[in-house]
Image 1 (tube, helix red, strand yellow):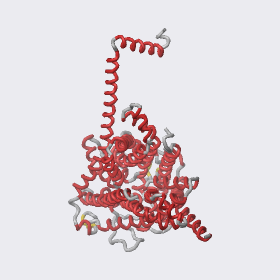
Image 2: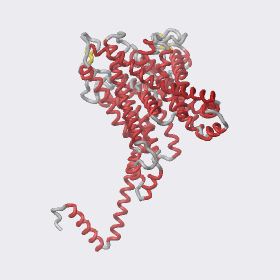
Image 3: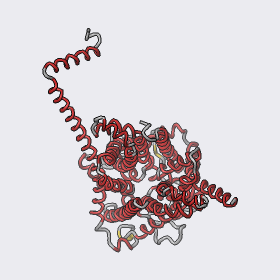
Image 4: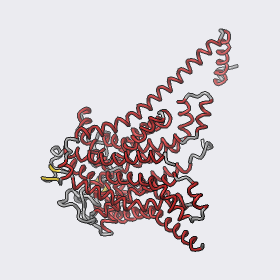
Length: 320
Length: 296
């Protein structure tokens, strides 16, 4: 056999030679030790990679911890009753953030009022009525893409459509409508999940009693799914509360003298206030404590809503 | 009996209409962006707009070339993806495969909280903490630069990547895993050779959606990227990605002036980018849908 002309065969013959020589040396023990060392490498590989994954997960936790800890340490001193209950003073270098809290409240709950009924209705269609087919496919594609539209593009749309075309001006209403469109996919997603959690037997029992589809949905499915939909509601509000780019051109202003008296007034909002103080003020260093304080209030608001939603959902999952 | 059924048909139709409004909104976004963005093409050709090297919208005569902004957007997205993809996917593998059930229950909400951090807060953190740190330790002219922005964007896209990939890995049928283990493969070999290939479509979807989130993210790049509309020569140079340009300049742009139309046109470009990302993600998710054990 010519090993030089055919290297693959040559390899094979060499291996065979090796095996034969091992057998001569009483190779059982040798083979066993080789298997053992192979097993050890395999185990080592596993340990190595698993530690890597652990580190990755740890980095995530640490990142969250560092951001929150930093804001807490720097922000808690700024927070007191005056800060929470007063308007900004001296061209926003002193005073509180009360108008921003009110503005954020109006905007996010306004967005919820717009998006919740509409999102739940969409979810009912998608989960209860729609048959698999092109219609369903197109609607899902639309919702998925809506979820992917950048918030600044929502802002541009809000500016062009609500503010200018509908002539709503820069106002709570424009902002709430824009944010409503932005959080719609969140609401639809969670509402659908809630509907999916309702056992099919509920529907079958109702239909078997002679109820129509709508009666079944209205009397049986919706009451059972409603608590789950509420978590989506909370998540939507929290998402809207933290959103900045979408309200920059549609609802938020640097400073207002008074609280909004109607939904056609512009407002101040927490996220926009942070941005303004941190980048556009004349005394950025001086207002640092206010910036930390505002950021802390915002994440406290957003996190508490999210935690409520998370715990509430965990409790609901044990229900059916 | 008949009226009940007709009523049901109407109700069904009503819900169909409500569900279709999402598409209508998407369509209207497109229409209004184009309506306000297209007039800029009277001043500058499409080629000149997309590949023009100069972005001086307020000088006279103004220059409307968004190439530096486009490059900046792609650069921050790519760099943040380099950090976020390994981190997100590895965390997902850890959560789905390695962590104990109790630990998983604890960490998953943590990832959700990370996703809920408002972008303006992350931008603020990048400005007041990371930027001075980078400036001092690396001795840079400014800490507000491409690298810092990418780092902050990575933290924003990790939760997206992590939670979607985790779902994908977690939903791989159990028998695949058990078969591999029964053949004598270690847990790691099973993950590498069986679990990851089986959930690759889900992971790709996650990665694309994460990148789509990064390219459209506004507040972070507005506050942290530095704001210089130049093609970056290193990762520590300040840049001005597209969303930052829109957000920073819209307030000053004269209503329905050229600058205003140019910013809307940037919005169109941004929208088309994310639309492509999402369509690709959707295509992958549909084409390689995990149905039972038969898709490996």
